[in-house]
Image (spheres, rainbow, N blue to C red):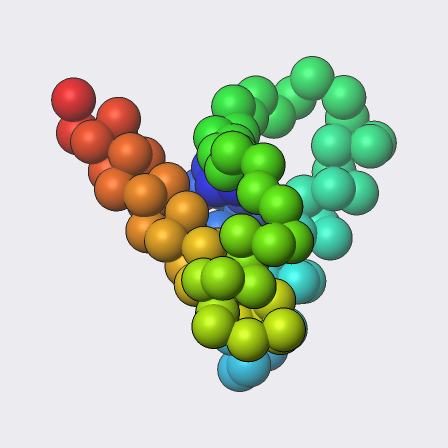
Length: 94
């Protein structure tokens, strides 16, 4: 998922209150959610969501080469994220 946080909130002074990137992002995300609850329809966002095709446990085990499925899940998630970001980049530029 991308394009959820608006530029207005990404560039907010709240973002500069914290030094840790995770804390910064979390703070402005909560700020935007609270704003949207208090003032519905004031912010218009169109999130971009990507889904992968379903995959079975047996296929994940084959891909990881063991009984562990987490390595295959992580590999697929990274691939999906890369595809998603490439699509967003072409969508935004074209």
